[in-house]
Each structure stands twice: as structure tokens, then as C-alpha cells.
Image 1 (cartoon, helix red, strand yellow):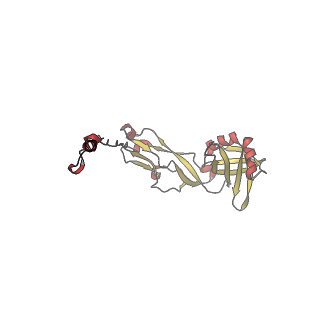
Image 2 (tube, helix red, strand yellow):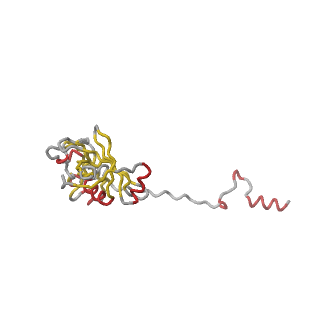
Image 3 (cartoon, one colour):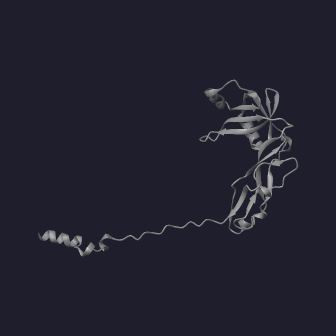
Length: 219
């Protein structure tokens, strides 16, 4: 687990369409959910949240200080404006320090990848895995050696991750994290032969258009 990530928040009275004014002030509306309790509406400053999110992602606990009251939380959902690419809402889930939680942990491929040196490329169908642990035991990330990717068709799966103590893997062991593939060959379409109409003989031995024109003039 990384160093404690702390984020200041304030209880929020503004709801509905009025939250647009909060965003204009550099604030992000958010909600703290807790099992068995009513959700709590809060607001956080934009830049401090972006910094905390970059550190925590969806896999590290965040100590949310709501008007001086500490709440241990996990970021569970971040709504993004697709046009402006800005955060519009955040969902936090309150957790207990002594209770196991599920979290998404990023997986990094480390070192040289022999398959790439041979002209292949690597695709990442999945770059996160889901694990279970108490918040203090959640790893920041997993590192897997790229040496296993020797030839096209080789793959790195969840089974290749070395698990630390007190952490349980939730993702299926067969889940692929990286696959070496051969470069795709793009076939160019064949050019169609263009035939001049003047080179096409008249059908069924009939008169050509020129012959018909001459007969017409003679009449």
C-alpha cells in the first residue's frame, strides 16, 4: 500500500442541476456510500481530487476528511464529461480498516519483451486485476516480467502474478493480461481494369453506334 492519501471534503447542500455552479467554482460534487447508512453528499476541490485519484485509482484507500471527520474510503466510480474530459462526479465507498475489500490493481509488464525485438507487437486485453484484502494490505500494483513473451501467440495471464501474503486474487487465473501478436498485413484491393467503350464490340454481331449513325444520316 502507498503512503496514506488524504483528501479534504465538505458536506454538500447543493443538489440536482444546481451542482453546475459548484463545478464553475472548481468543486466536484461527490457522494459517500456506506452499507446500512444513508449516502452523504460532499464536495471536493478539483485539483486536489485529481491528484488523489492519480495516486489511488480504484485500488487504494483514501482518507476523506469531511469537515474534520475522518472517513476511510475507496473511490468506486468517477464520472467524466466526454466533451471537456473533466470530472463531473465521484462516488466514494466508506470502508473499515479491519474489513476485507475488493479493489482493482494495475498490472505493469516489466523488462525486455523478446517478441517485440522479433518484430511482433504486444496487446493488453486487460491491464488491471481484482483482488481482496484489508485496505492496508492492498498492493499499489503488480509487476510481471515480459520475458515470457518470446514468440507471437505467447501470453501473460493472471496466473503469472506473484501474490503477496494476505491478498486474494479474484480475477480468473486464465485472464490474459498481455499477448504477443504478429503484425497484421493489410492487403491492397486489386485495381479494376478500365475498358474504353470504343473498344467494346457491338453485341450479337449487330451494328456499332457509328454504323447506326451513318445509316441514319443516309435516310
